[in-house]
Amino acid sequence: MNLQDFRTRADVFLVGGIQEKFIEMTTKYNEGNYGDAVAMAKTLVESTCAYVYHAVTNKEIEEDKGHVQVTGNYTIGMYAAVRETLRLFAAQLPNFEQTEKNRNDYL
Image (cartoon, rainbow, N blue to C red; front, side, top):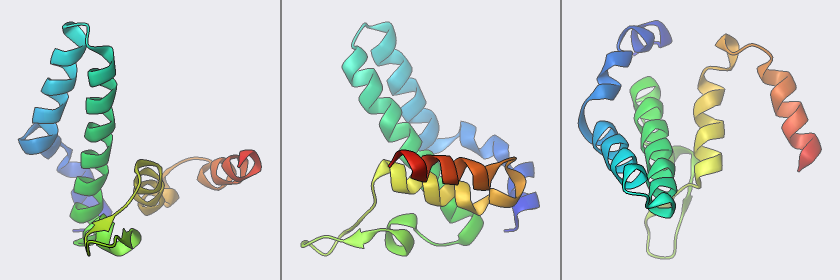
């Protein structure tokens, strides 16, 4: 799938696991369980990155950009997943290089 095809298929975010995580996050927030809502938001971001990365590259982000744990499972942190997913679209994001430079200045 090329990037143009991906943009025309953005409606697929409304189905499956990503929608379930959004509903869970919203439910927790509406119940006043803000800590759980934030945890679900983190899960939502991670799931979205995994979905987008796979849709564009046909690879699993954890295996492609993550690292292997002692158990043999692959893992990637949320920040790294967001960074690697955004890099797929760097040519389409205004000021992406400057944003990366600014981020590195603060680390």
